[in-house]
Image: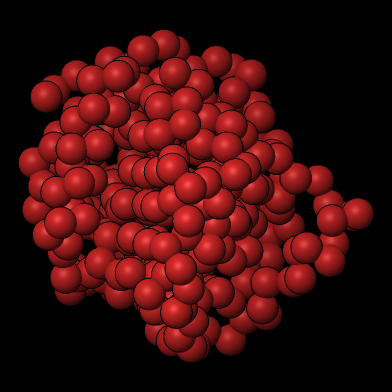
Length: 271
């Protein structure tokens, strides 16, 4: 399936919301056709995961299934088509006000019914060997998403703290070695911070900045799934920035620190 146009245009108000809050909800951006083919691709991945997949509930010895897999586009034709031909890249470029975007990677974040595993408070950038301001994550709902099924909660404006935090492990490991402060106790700061959470329908998505702090509960529903296709995007100012103890990735390109990231692993999609 190839369909490059979005269901609707992105508004100036949505661009401004992202700039101020570090996250914006883009409702109805993807067609039901994209949702349908991505659901099929998710099932294929869950039945035959890639080398970089993880079973995060199992790793933490918790109930349910929290399935995680990355760089899906490199081995699944549907996800490759999505990366190169869906509205995702153009939406990220417009929201970030970037003249070009590279796909950094895509992934599944799937919480099956009865999954108790929460996604810890974190921000994205320090898990990865890149740096810059124009880094964003597009979180596309493939099922209706509510607080009960594990909707993501964001700390509004936290990207403007300009503070990088040590990555919080999703699996309970201690692999991240960069000398950074831990994410503060966000739940203990609820009286002094502002939060936003979105109920989503299939085809809705959020786009959040690489420094926006966010997390989510488990899926408390006994019957409703929470499947999301997540794509990570890098704009004009993004450079290669090696770090210690990174999220597991394929072999990295032969780049020097400070280089633009254009490469076979991180191809330019827009611009």
